[in-house]
Amino acid sequence: MSERCFNCFKPTSACLCKYTQKLDTGIKFIFLMHPKEFKRQRTGTGNLSHISLKDSEIIVGLDFSKNEYFQNLLNDSKYFPVLMYPGEDALNAKSENFTQILGEKTLLVIILDATWFCAKKMIEHNPFLLNLPKLSFYGDYRSIFTFKHEPKPECVSTIESCYYLIKELQSVNLVDKNLNPEPLMNVFKQMIKLQLQAENERILGIRPNTHNYDGKYKKLKNIPDFINKV
Ligand SMILES: [Zn+2]
Image 1: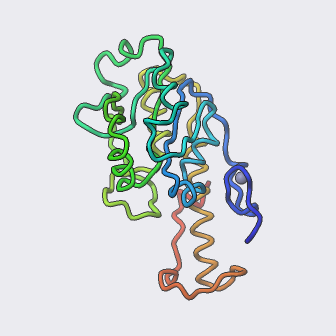
Image 2: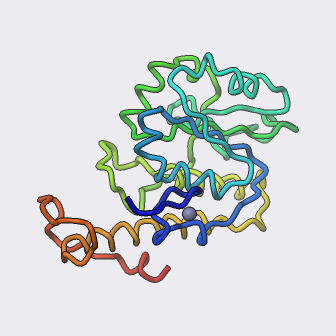
């Protein structure tokens, strides 16, 4: 086992922390993770988002209705909690009166850091989450890359969700327009690049301590230009 960065959990040789910047968005972000997913996905984009966003936290659990800390946040009158979730009834940055609804409150954005399938399971275990106002995008986005084969093409990663949400809120002046959200996308591209390079090294047999016996690592991955340039 190679040494790992204590922050991004990547092997120290592939540590992504140097590409991250702590963005002060004025929004509080909460990433909810399933304990099983936490172990598997702690190297995922939820953790990278947490590293990149100043006022953000990861809460790991199964039944969040019993999480006192989380419940206190939801009931704290200084916050306006919203669940990032699609739906006809979902608000978006351009919804009529959104600024008025928000008032002086700080937006508390709750993101289920999971695959679409797992997110549905999390909702089944925590139906109270659907009682929160939902927030979605007014734009239509595709992930620049998917490692997991999500059943829905519109599933964007957690870090991309944060990126697009910040941009949409900037478009209506709910987040400072001088804030540059690009570090979020850049670190995501770096992550993809390192992952594709690692796969290619495995295929070429030049990666130490790995064997190319896994059938899925046969074809060299093309690293797209827009990622290579980062
Ligand atoms: Zn790191």
